[in-house]
Length: 183
Image (cartoon, rainbow, N blue to C red; front, side):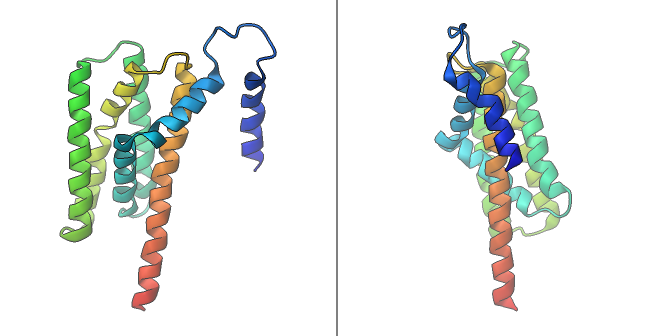
């Protein structure tokens, strides 16, 4: 709770707009837009839930390293593209995102039905994580007007990590209930 209060204390004063400089992009506007962005797009939800589902099937540190690595690569792609340092066109980035979504869906389905080996889950989870930079580049090129880039990235990262962690947590609860029923 103290962390929530600290974050609110840092963000709420900019919402009051009781000072000059309103024409500049506000950090809080960027955070809000960034946080809502993955929640409102089906492509984002599919990618993030798939990463969470694939990571949930891993053991030990890798269960949490996959979402953290995904986020780190996504942020690296975001800031690189925002700075104009992307080596591929926007069309290629969108194609890579589409390929990653199809691959993620296939990996999740195969992992739940036919291929339940630990090696498959590692390859699938880390393979999808490799596409994270493309997801980040797309967002670095398409920051909404009026949004602060750093704020957008911060809100986006918070929402993405929450979605992936939520998927891992829910699957752990489901797995525990299955284990109790089987016992």
